[in-house]
Length: 248
Length: 232
Image 1 (cartoon, helix red, strand yellow):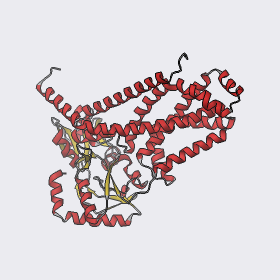
Image 2 (cartoon, one colour):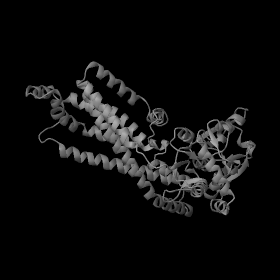
Image 3 (cartoon, chains in turn yellow, brown):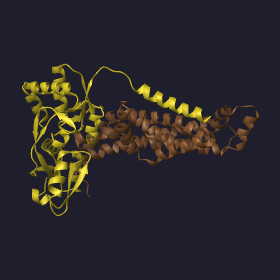
Image 4 (tube, helix red, strand yellow):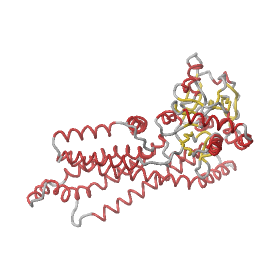
């Protein structure tokens, strides 16, 4: 009796596993953070859109490969890449030394400045934000979150870092008044200013960063292909068109 | 707070945002229901075997099932999702989609809970039922599958519909893996439009409707399959 039940369990598990694995034609999967407008988001119809999405589509067409865009949680995007759930990341990822140990980056395509977003009527200065035990928001798992911990909090600045799932959620809490400011890349900050009663206070001393696409260490061919495609794209008039459309 | 023109405009904007996002969110409810159905069916199948094993099995099988139930009831869903998605299946070199992994994990957890529902129903049946079936010459297996389980499963429906609503709500956590269910979609649209409140409100509303429909349907099923004259 017991043995039979056990073998039934095993057969059932095997069935579930086998039916869900099927062979398909190779389509590259680009993992995106769909909470990162204007670089990556989903449009009204739920289709991935944004500066990075359209850029990759152009590169795929130019270089002759197929690509789909898969919205993911930003926090787990590098583990997903390493676990082969996705093949590369083109979604406003900053090049950092720490990430370089995990993945390979293409040539940089965008320079990004880190800024603070505050309520429209705020009169605080950058120094005042990082004092008095103020609460400051940031997206979890980002380079700015790491930088703020290492260069501000550990050096004795008196404020509390609140980590969010996405930059728009931190902006929402700035508007709600739960936090006094939120740190993020200047592009999503500009997007927030267009849509919510907030303003950009300015840079807070973090160095500029480069955006590049990330691929697995062993995927040398894909890296070469993306690099070549990116260089072609940046030399093409379409690149200027993208900038005009998405205003990153 | 007095209602001003600005509030009215805000309200209208919120309604417009909900209207625009609704088809996209409703499409997410198909994904959610896929997750829930997959998980409930896997949980039902495994749960029945686990329950039968726990009631009628030998000491070794009983303790193995005990550990299984203890594990899946004791570890948080989010931990199991990450453990299976990034850990176990990657380690075994099986590349499953986030959807499949979420359905399997929800199903395994649900099987642990469902097994306890069925076990309770089986032991609540009068002992004479099993003895009578054996006395009529039925084998152990026949007695369990034709006499015990049909009654036990009927008794389990109310608790099972409770389990359905729990799995339905738990399925929202699958958004952490990037499964495009209701919550993930609400989150994505909110990031683009900055209409957080109306969108989460709508997502909650869709979950409420799905819970209502499911429990209502199971209530009808309970009446349909009830044995005439058999009162609990």
